[in-house]
Image (cartoon, rainbow, N blue to C red; front, side, top):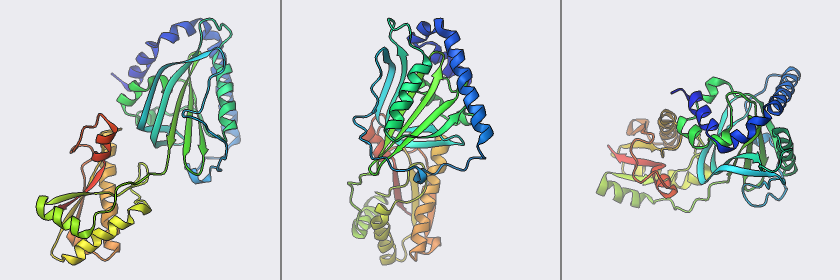
Length: 333
């Protein structure tokens, strides 16, 4: 079954879709309006550059409790999914930006007794709330089919209510950037209702301490391998500054043991696409090797390799297990 068929089937199964079918004409009018806005915007805008979150101005608004939005009278959430930690794709207008953090995914429709409800009214309400929070619109266009195909099928099915009909309608994305967190909002039409995805990402709160060179040596002598706490930027191979202490301890280990050769192996949890995870884990292992060689370790003593999500050490069905599976291992060669 193709991705588009899978998602459309899930969307059509939603109970509130049947209630919305009587308002098809209103939905088509709304869709036409959005498409006209997109055409005008495309004609007036120069080719967009790659998304850079650092260019989003900081907001000082009080966000309140996640997911930060209270619905206006006459509307309700349906088919809601919430996660304390998930890897979520957001459309930036040129590409998918993968965000790790809290997730709220839901469809929004009018209550049966609220006959006046429609997509455009709830859209305008949500946009007003998001802008009051300091939200900046970064995308307002339809996601290309080849980009949609990069969203894993299991994610599309599980969060279909929040993704909406991304195959046939434009998607709007907003970002609220604050000192201690970033909030992402994505709105997509589906017939006469609206889909909403909200994610909150925060700077990583590292509680694990770097293993000393002697502790690393002891584990390698005993088990021939040891897992270390090295943190990376979300969905990237960039080593975060808080991992510098651990890098320095690995450097000390190798300098104190000149005959020691190590495999630097990257691992991920099973969130997202397996092929992407495999590539990312390899890139992260290469980044660690690069950091070590820059510190004076000979490259012929190090071998980098990524295994993606193929070698879990814990259950991926819960967040504790996923955290343990996201790791870098040092293996004695």
